Image 1 (cartoon, chains in turn orange, blue):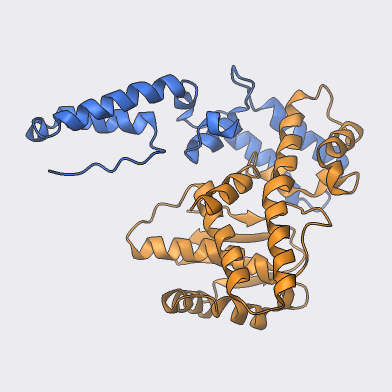
Image 2 (cartoon, rainbow over the protein chains, first blue to last red; image 1 turned 90 degrees about the vertical axis):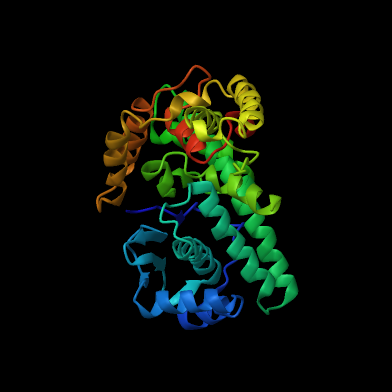
Length: 215
Length: 120
């Protein structure tokens, strides 16, 4: 049984300020924001080898459900990870673990699952201690990333269906039309994995963001 | 009296099932009559609102082909020709419904309990 839950929307360069830390420090940041029960579950996940760092595989950050529980693969560069990416995947994992403890082994649908992951990012931002203005910028960035940016990606994805001829040139043009306002590179469409592997997964992020702030 | 949880985003198909179950189980026929009437009204209202959404409770006919084509993304020799080919195949394998919405998108929305009206 596998559930895809990746964070790989290929953010526009101005949207995502990095919050990078060595993995051990990043885990402490996330751990410190959690309840005792969630800390225990995250501790179990790490010590059972269900958090792995990857490099150069091109599959992005992923949380999948295995028979042993949630399994996270996180992109790292020399052991340094993005704290919000870790928070996101931990959000997926803890939502799954909590369901299992309640006897529900059926995976959540995508929007609900992404809402849990996005909520964890904002929770970590809210609860962790760093300069407040920096966190404010990060929060703004996450709103832009999951809202307008992913809506622009969705417009591109829908636009594919109206194209008479799909070529690098016509795709560059459509990409500029949809995402030009974000100052992205001309050929950014090449690097968004979901367009190829998960049709219309990206629209689930704005829908999930809406769900987070509805609650 | 047992309770049937009614969520605001419940689908017409689920209401139909609950309604049918109530009718089938004679033990609750008296107690459930009022509830059945309410469910019936809600079902009628929802089916009017979501005529197209109820038709996608099925597997995409080309799901495997789309997935197999998309997985070439992980190929080490990925180039623009392959990228265009993957996107062109995806579009060709994904029929549009009467409202011009691709079936993969329709299924995503349906699986997440998102009404096409809300999505639009």
